[in-house]
Each structure stands twice: as C-alpha cells, then as structure tokens.
Length: 270
Image (cartoon, rainbow, N blue to C red; front, side, top):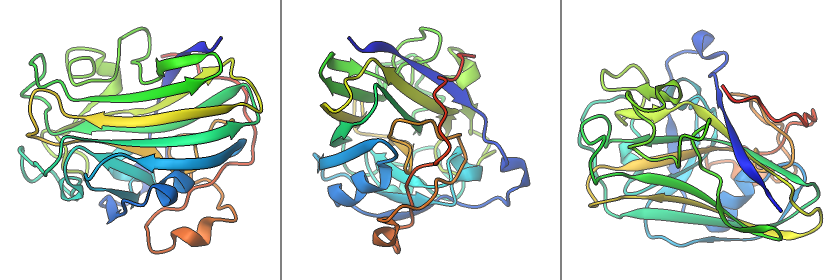
C-alpha cells in the first residue's frame, strides 16, 4: 500500500544572491524529451505521452521567478503567459489544460519531485468556480489514482481556492505587484511531493495534469524541476548534475538529471 503523500515548502535558497533573471522558456511538445528532462536517479523511463495541443516546454533561469532553476513547464494556454514580468492581469492563451504522463520502473520504495503551481486567476477569482488546479496522479502496484498534489498539513488538493492569501498562505507567494519576474499574479512556494511504499522493480505511471476550471480564460501553469522525479530528494533551487542524456537538451533550455547525494529522510511538514 502506498503511504499517503507528503509535501514540504521549499525556500528558494540562494535567490537573494541571484540577479533578477526572467524565466526563459522554449516551446517543446515532444513528450519523450520532456519526460527525459524530468527523470532522475532510481527510475527507468519506459515511455512518455503528452495528451494536449497546449503549449508546453522547457525553462531555465527560473530561480528568481519561481524558485526552480530549470525543468519543464506545462500550461493551460500559452508559454507567452510565463513572461519576464507581471505586465498584465489577464494573460490568456488557447487551450484548457495539459497532461504529461511518465511510465517508469522504480528501483526504490520512494518517489520524490519538486514543483511550483502558478496562475493568472489570482487573486481576483479566489473562492469562485474558476478554480484552476494541478494534479499529480500516481498509478501502479498499491496505488490507484492517488493525487500527490496535496497542500501540506491536510490542506486539500493544489488549487486556486486551497492555496492563496487567505488559505494555506504559508505556501503562497503573491505576485500582484510584480515582486517576482514572472507574469502570473500568484504562485506557490516550491513544493516537494513524495510517496512511500512503492514496490521496487515495478512499473508505475505518473501524470502531471494542469487544468482550467469554469472557463478557458486566464492561464495557469506548473513548473517541474528537471531531474527530480526519482528516488532521492533534490533540494529546491539546486541544479542537478547532468546525466548522459544532457546533450539531448542543448537548445531546449533545460538540463535535468539527479543529485548523487542520497537523502532518504522526507522533509518535515511546515
């Protein structure tokens, strides 16, 4: 049986010393390349699917903007809404969501990865039916459609209405005044998702799902740290060591692989 998921807020370490860089994105709807960018230590990627026509891609220089330096970004509309500064409160692109599914074999009983949820729905539509969401659906031995994207401390799933200035505010960053070099009006802190009780050597699937709720207006996105989907914890903001596949991603703006330092302790909840 899979142990219920735990998440921890991660401080954007070193961001105070970094220049105010934009989040650089490169359009990439190739499922294999996106999955490879995310795969880290202890998992063997078998296949990857991308069930969307929405714009997705890789990103770099994201430490100041989202607290993650590089990885994969999935959107409900358009990469142009990522932006370098919060210049508009109504950025909208075509589309209603995106679903990237990784099918993999694990060598351990644990799984970890880091991500940030962001949206233009903040702060005007908190508490409304326009409750955009992010889900992380795990399937495999002992896991049946488990949603790993839960607010720490039992705060419910990661949605506009569950993480904002009034609810679970510890895990929310307000960007209405443009404090961060990113277009979205609000975003979560870096969250580390984890699941324990997996069967080593078994096959699992993990679906990263970002979706609009209520209508297709005002984009949302999820930023997933490159190389952190694996059996060890990568500190938020850290740059994973490049693996043998790193050269595949030159020109795509992301290098993902795994930290070689093994840490088995799940971060304590804040």
